[in-house]
Length: 207
Image (cartoon, one colour):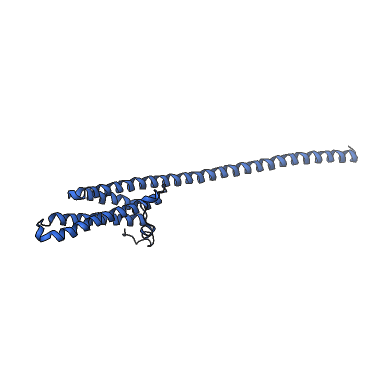
């Protein structure tokens, strides 16, 4: 084979080899890019799934806490109402039920709602003490007429205050659970409600 032919053959071989290498290299590069894109897509999908899962768990927790609060608040208000309605029976069961219901409120409520509930239970205990004193006082008109009159006035005032405290509690409980606000005539005075929200959170073991 003469030199010129050899040169042409070699040139053809080099050209063909270069084409093959270029084709293989291009295919390899394309495969690598496609693989990276697939990996990125899977990673993004996995991240989206994790974010969605955490969001759903957080939402379920919020709903559970809201429902638990609503049940505890409703049960407590019902027990307080029963205690007030049956105060003159001198049956401690109703007051005890209110105290037990308040324990459930303390487990889930923020501090301002717990403070409002504590004031309610204190008022129930106060009313019970006043009525017990009323019934244990001698009915002799000459000896205790004035004292009984004053005591009855104290009882009436205490029951009226219980109604006000109940309105405050309901107002704060509805705020806490995101419920629709009550009609204006059933809402407490602004100063009544804000008095429960001005204090900092208590140390562990507080209300």
